[in-house]
Image (cartoon, rainbow, N blue to C red; front, side):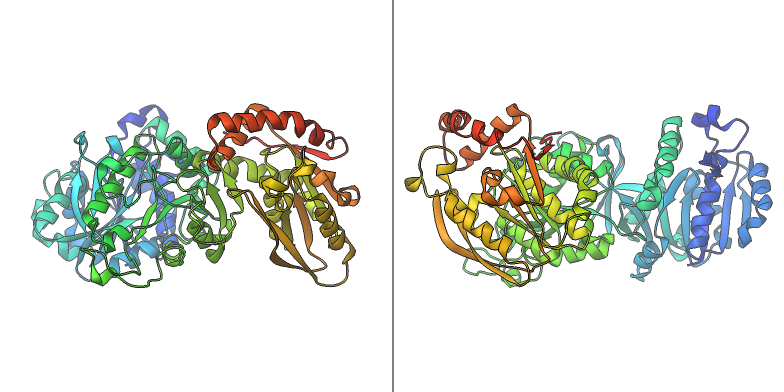
Length: 634
């Protein structure tokens, strides 16, 4: 495909004050006219023949192209004489169209991997046209497009929409790959005003012509109003337009569905069971605006068990998308696994009863996203409420966040430990977008100065953010090519029956000190240590539960309430004391104990008791440590 048709006949009435005497396609975008941005993009991807269909102030556009020597390619401006609409203008030049061609609207700013787009179009010989689609943050007042599992467009849903119906969040972005042969039945309609979206595409579907959708999160926005052109200019100056191209690696947020975005309902199979968790839409909206690609990855064995059809699941996802869209949030992809390995369910689908590569924690859905969206796994995150999600992150090389909604990690299916544990998806967004980058930025130089084999101690009150801070340091060190290990002093919490009074007596301090002394003394050889484990839901201490190997040059990060009370803390290379807002800390303590099975009143009692026998002891350890204060909510 080497030909692009640019529809450049618009008057730009709404941009009159910005345009002055210029035609709409010559509106300035950071020093370069919009039309030139489009032609240079096409040239970059190998297009060497351009038809510019002009009308309003046509001669100015012709003169502009000539002043640029047509950018060294074949550029022909054709004047419609009278407005014919988007489709009418293209049909009017039917005789000059190549067998396959690209259509751009002259009022859209974009940076799209056109090679990917054209390959998708060429992958099916039966496709009449491929429409570039994407989700947006206002689907409730947009014209929407519905596709099937093969990406064939089945329906167009023009605005306004029925209030009691749920729709996919897919919008026609006004960029098309087209087959000339598919337009042949309509070529004689080129002398009347005809629009692609309103008229021709719906008619083509009715006539049995296959139209496909190409769903991409790349940047393509119309510049037809003052507000929109201002936004495009800001985005261009910040690099957002270029960065969003799938020619570049993309950072992604992978999200579990049930218990993370929507309320946990076992075997969910109907629309009335779908409701968003508090703050979920706000979190996803924040990810959208920061340029992360948001991808749901969800196991849906209800399909294999025959408890939910693919059509029902599709409607469930439409409702989720609609609810998110009402709060200006969207998902770039929804991947699901329909399989289940176990047989024996009444009404099950035998064809889906198998061991597959997509059922979490298998990595098939992540692999699909890497291909579809050019995902950079090192810059991406997995957020979910189960150990299965955390194991998936581990296998895929993703940073992991466990949310304490839904199952809150208590499913017990996998031993994987999350990099971070937070209360909700909203708090996960704060961690990813605010806390993580700010901590890395502030402490990177200190981390870079650490010598091989260094010991870092991190103390602070319970639920103040110590483990969050410790694991951020670990990941930042990894980015510097340094290996480190985080060891929590919670491992040395005693079984409930063995505890004494006060915070130190709740820990096996002698064993903890011995373990840390052993680590400090082994400076030239591989360190093999056996660590205990504390099972907080059972309130049980287990000795020698896990074996660790630590290389002499590895950095050891010890974090926990009593970390700064250990003998090793005196000689540590770095000492940090993590603090946070007390009201927030109280809420986190109470939530933690409620998750362990305490009533709210019992959890409040624990908090008040700790104020007496723990908080003063730990606060006294702050004086010579580097103080860190983490915001834990947006």
